[in-house]
Image 1 (spheres, one colour):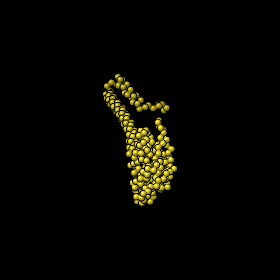
Image 2 (cartoon, rainbow, N blue to C red):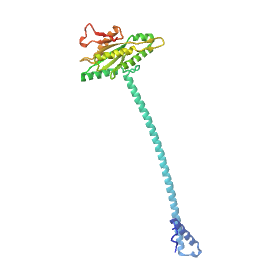
Image 3 (cartoon, rainbow, N blue to C red):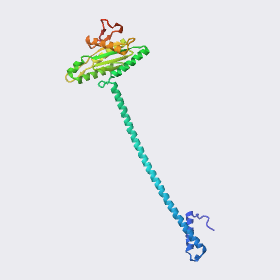
Image 4 (cartoon, rainbow, N blue to C red):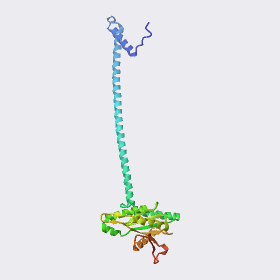
Amino acid sequence: MPDSKAKPYSRRALDDDLEDRVLAALANPEFDGHPLRTILEEVLERMALHVSKLERITLISDRYQSGVQERFRNLSRRYDRQISRLEKAIRISDRYQSSLNDLNRALQEASTHDQLTGLPNRKLMADCCRREDERVIRDGTTYSILAIDADRFKLINDTYGHEVGDKVLIALADSFRHSIRDGDHCARWGGEEFLALLVGADLRVAQTVANRLLETVRAILIDIDVAEISPRVSIGLAQHCAGEMYPDVYRRADAALLIAKQTGRDRFVLAEEPAAQGTTDAAEATTSR
């Protein structure tokens, strides 16, 4: 009896053993002329043919698998390159979009603000005044306008040059920013003239702001090589009255500004009420000293 503990042959080992036994039987001269010899030889030939076919199929399969894997790797590399290009394009697009947004903001700033002083320009200030007119009509409140002009500015330009004149305008603009209240607006109205819109301010509040503005300007000292310049301003002050729109209020403030210029400068003058137009006293001259 065979040893029960012996390890069983694998299928490959059994096939090889069978083939060896068949080959041994065919090589044995005792079996020459045996009727099964021819059959065994044919079986061996067919087995060899099948093995050859299987080897070819295996080779083709291996090549196909290798080709598929290589194509997959190529596709994967192409996909990675496309993703890399797309990410680069997105980064370029983001930078372009950011630059475009910056340019739009710069253009918006340039269209609404004075390039020299950085203050709102006349167009933006007019829009603010129109909105304030709408608010006054809706809420029944008031506002005041300060028409501000740099004193003897032409003399500064003619004596020291336009570059020094620009320094004066910039210094004045900075002082106005610190003098008006939060929520108020100040703009460069044109040349050396500025306009302040005091939201919700009556004459009492507006005079306080005008006094503070004059004091702030008096503290300015611009040191140049040949001189020290201490600019001054004159102010015309008008409070909105019922039935007026901002151009009406501005005209009264501008008329008061002219009187401030004619009566000594470096001061503010209150505009007359609309009902008092045509009287001999155009405005009441009031100094902050």
